[in-house]
Length: 614
Image (cartoon, rainbow, N blue to C red):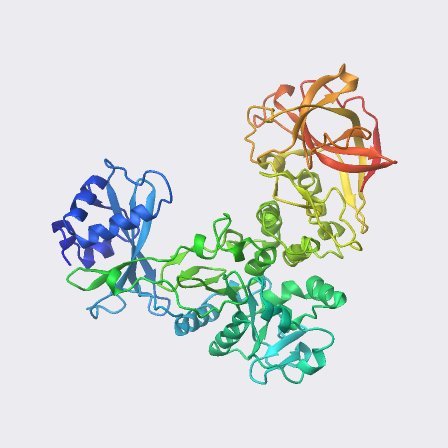
């Protein structure tokens, strides 16, 4: 290996002094390419890392400087800051080089990065779990920040790893257990391993793991290695042919199962047929560059948590695009992820790679535990629904159950009927104005005996939904609340009949509104009592051109969005937010949302009345 003159001059003191501070590495990308072509192995590695950070387009910016900044990790036991990696960047493109010791450092804990072995190294996971349990107060509490129950919670059933059988949770003395989060996929072994009413009694006596899917058997081995006797796996611990048992677990236990688990073992593989402990694609010494007097190895980071385990973007694995896993990740105080490149340990405080590199946790885990957690969760609810709603579910009837565990932590459905439909009563005048975001919504495919959710609930439809951010500051003009059967009662409502006009491609409104939703099925809305003039626009849940010919269409005034300039008296800079409904056989049903600019008093002389929307 050979280094160029500037790479030869890099020393540990220079790196330590540059923690989180960008330091010029090469004057330009062109210069970096030149030294890489001339054989500098570190320049070659930096160039490859920067180029790999851009999936498409021109990765070269010849005239822009290349920088590096050292990333340090604080050892919680010794409070010593050690070097973990280098963040190399050029004009917004960046990547990490993991720093691992080549020779024994002259100072303790000087370099904390590590090469990732081809197979998962479980002692690393044990250490990460132990440090979190001992040091992180918020990770030992419930999602809402409340203390964990004094009497350990156990799910209705768990698998006893030592005795190789299912056990009722009420019969377990030691309350610590692991849970499993994974993708079912198309697995014959999983289908054959399900617990049913017909085999439950036998499984309470004996249940060998040799016939389990690979994900199950390796998760059980991992849980045992981490020191757990019990593990919860959905298809083993819930009767798969008993709707009452499913409903009890989904409604009364799901949130507790994951947030009381000491750790959730997470396989991001596409099927339960794949084992968690499979070999990974890792960087080896062949990929490493030795520098700083051969004291440090620099190796490319093979992992990227946004891609390996997913985040709020759709770029992650299949696991991160499944509906149930959204709440499993958020509710779990700790997750241990097994991916194709390395392990990740995520708790409510941090996300750590097996290399030692640290990242921010999932955005919805970043809660201020010194404040009111429920209020923070409720404020985040529209964003959570937006990200959850784009995920896939095998059973459309799970649209509410798969997120009810989070919702019930904010407010119980028995206290607030709106929770059972995906809302909170004190936010209904905002959240009722959801709309399709990016792709048209499609009706749920439900069994014949299933009851449809009401038309005003986003969960009735499949597809991504969203909200305009300006609605948060809008002024309510109505009182609305649901009953336990799903009827939405709107009191003192102003209802105006409208007609659908021409299709349009973009909304219109006050200049200060920044549209945050990709609107679908947009049409002009016409007010017959205003000389058939176009006064606004509507976006419909499904295309209205096919089935509204024989139905009367109305808009209900929900709220007003005021001008951002408090001192303005101009009505042109205000708008009314509308719920669009059809009227058929004495029943109102939601059809979409709309908006009119308040340049005229369209609702001033409208008589208030109480209406019911189903």
